[in-house]
Image 1 (cartoon, helix red, strand yellow):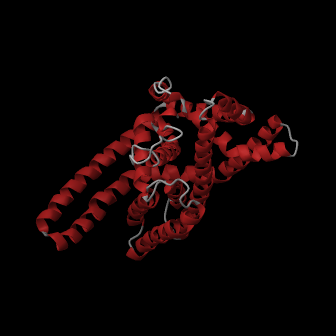
Image 2 (image 1 turned 135 degrees about the vertical axis):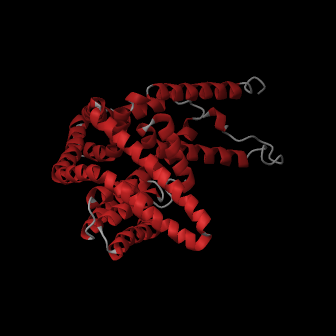
Image 3 (image 1 turned 90 degrees about the vertical axis):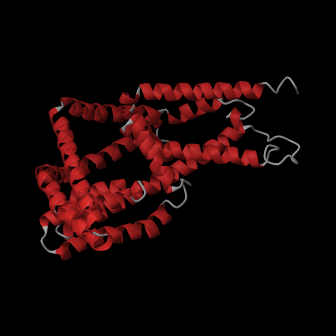
Length: 369
């Protein structure tokens, strides 16, 4: 018994070093990870469909081609139908950006400052007006500079083509060999802890699968809703603003708030009637109420089991460390960490570390994972 005790620190050190090495490699290669992350995500989402086709005796390679081909066909058809409209609105929005920023600085900010003046007094309102005008000017310079870099740099186009060409190829190989890779990783598990690791992996898979399906449905529903509602309200650029707001719905509150701010600025620049501006605001208020109280609780529920603040922190941290790839990985990584933390907490609460009346240590030490 005494001889086996040093194994726990050695295993803990081994997994700690392995995790640190993996994070270091991912950080060093972050610039080339995007197509591989997208390809793996596609394979993960499509694996159940490929398994169903394989269950009716369709060869795995053919099932992979069928699933990816069907999904790719729907994507191409959607792009063909929607891209001309989106492209036209993007060009117009870029052209109107200086005017909209002027509206923000000279129309919206003074009105907000006047409202604050009536509440807080003239001194605070004047300070806020100066600060807001300064920030609006900085945002304008930053946005125009960023747009110039994007349009003048051929690297951005090359990156897009690189991702579009490589992602389907990576997804094909991942999806074709998914079951083989899972079986191979399962064979590498430490035999003593294999059952526990499988249970933890099953919990992670359940959370991620439910979240991906549910949240993708929520994003699609509200991309359609915001686009249609804003277009019916007569708002310029309603389609692209609505699609962006719908996609950002997976970030708690940010999708609705960001879409509301942009839409209000556009509405002030487009309409002289405050009633039309109020209609645009009502679209987002109604959409957010429906999303947070009805749609998301029923389609996503508590599958991720993460607090909204933790999700926002994970997205910001992922973006700071790995860029856009980190944003894509943030919520899944946070969900995995959440499962491991809950498992470790459960082990702790049943151990003598928590209650010294417990005479036996937990069967599986979290450090051994």
